[in-house]
Image (cartoon, rainbow, N blue to C red):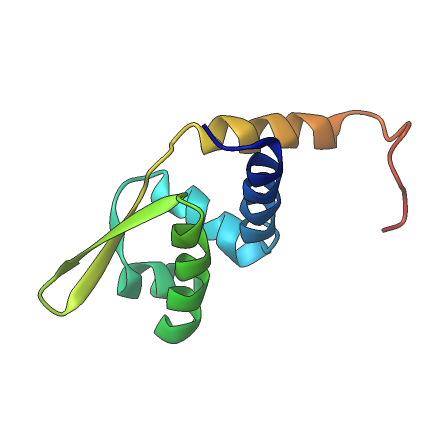
Length: 104
């Protein structure tokens, strides 16, 4: 069982991994199912090295898993429940801004 400080550090690393629009886009794309890096790169109009770097960040915290097949690497969501979390955030974003910072 991780200590409280280890747990908090994991949470911090997890949220850092999601703290980029491209990585959130990749998570949402992977909700459709397993995809190779080349397909993900084409979908978000980015080069493969950039997408691979973002996927590595997501893999490091366990959000995605990968499998190499021949010359291609395929990624899938390890924890599809993260989509529920993102939907929850969307609902929060639709609520009135009282208590939230504005103009950021």
